[in-house]
Image (cartoon, rainbow, N blue to C red; front, side, top):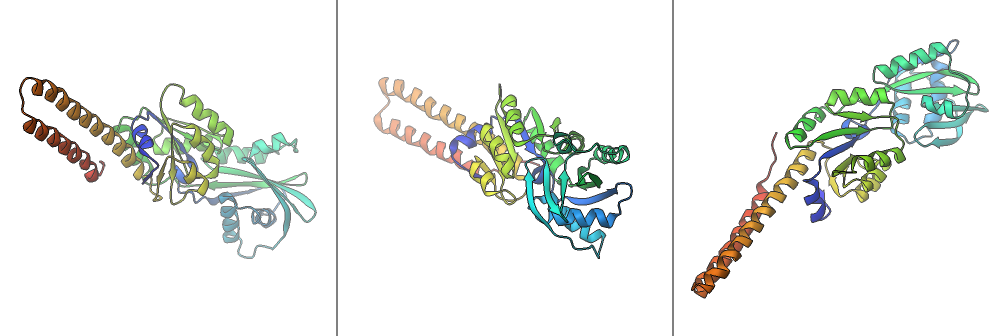
Length: 331
């Protein structure tokens, strides 16, 4: 655990709300393709060959999952080439395949771009996938919808236990900020035991959510990606998942969990609270000794014993502080 200064270490112990990013923080960050639904008159080979061609040009984790999943499902997938790929932040991607524009992304993207109306059967399949907690992607080629893809990212096995340990440390509220649709966010939040989830958020929306949460209390933001950096900056304390985190997130964060292990989060919060407790103990011990020695020396206490008591209290303060080296946390 890397703490960038004494202030973040002290402030972390006063945090009352923790906001989590979803992908790569509460989940494994390794999505996999689980569902392929073709539109009427479209074969799975047609759908996946076009989709894989476009996603090969993207470096998004979901794109890699689609490419890997498509090649696994169809061993002899026809090779197609895409070019002029353009990423649409928080929405999807488009590219040119065989002279036609192919757009892959969230449902909201097609509403914003005045695309053709999604056919009712395909829309029903889309809603069913979202209801089951899948991240969904629609594929449109020209004016024809080819189908819908469903992906799933598994929650970390340690997530529920970590949330429980944080509650025992006195955290009042834990929430999740996600770019996925609200149904997916709700499904993950319920599985790991969070108080609430906010879905369909763009990076700017995450910043607004953090500002609203931190109006009256201290808030920590835990994330691992570039999209989380602005929210971390606006939180009282920014916490980066180190091993899986981007350079931007690590530079922005006040606290970096160097291992890709969520279990270090309760340790960090507990250590901060233990540090604050020991600081208070040492202040009372030091001030109490001074309050005793000043009148005692006036009333006749010799200089030798007074110095001995003063230096002895200093030694006790140091030894008390060294107890932090033995802190291991609980649970």
